[in-house]
Each structure stands twice: as structure tokens, then as C-alpha cells.
Image (cartoon, rainbow, N blue to C red; front, side):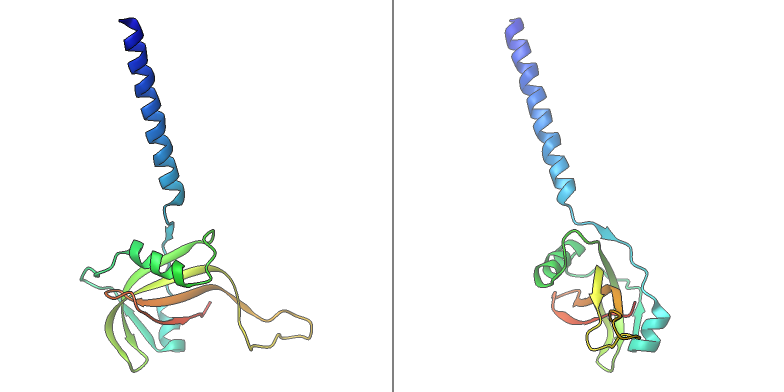
Length: 146
């Protein structure tokens, strides 16, 4: 009788360890979304983009957009990714369009921009932003400004 009780305890302990291991693996590979604070004034001035807080819920979730964005880009999965939901207006094409702005953090050289001194590296940005339609997942455009 005590043997079966010990066997049940060992089985329960094994199951608990297995479940905790699965939870740990899940948390390790869970996308890490970071809060991004877009510079609304700079976007308006430099790129003719206006962002407003939406009231409605988008058709696609942040997780779905994350999968779409990281599947289509050169993003290093070790880098942070920020995802924000906005209503976008501007550029003579968009009027309060629900979008996700996916911000990839890393080193992004600015092609075609000369360095200030011979031998210096060209300037670079530490963020690259991709804009996706929040209802369809279609990539609309991308921008870099900081």
C-alpha cells in the first residue's frame, strides 16, 4: 500500500515538473512587446502623419501582427519589438485608418546619406517602424525618424 502511495506521489511530482517546464518554455518564447512612445509632433512635422487613440478593437491582435511582421522582415528575434495600435491620418491617403505600428529596435544604417567626415560611418537610426492595417494585416509603409 505504501508503495502505491509513493508511486502516486512520484507520478504527481513528475507531472508537476513537466508542467512547470512547459510553462517556462512558453514564457521564454513569448513575444516581448515593449511600450513605444511615438514622437507625435515629429511625425506630424517630418512625415505628415497624425496619430490618434482608437476607440474600437482591431480585427487582428498584437500577437497576429507580431507573427506577420517578424515573418516578413529582417528583424533579429533577439531585439525588442514594440507594437502600438493607432488611428493614422495623413500623407493625402489615410483618414483615421486603424493601424498597428511595429517598431523594431536595432542598428539601421541610413542608405544614401553621406557621413559628415571622410572615413566616418553614415548616420543610423535605432528604430525602424512598419505600419500594418489593423484589420487586414497588409503592410502599408515603413518609416525611420529616430
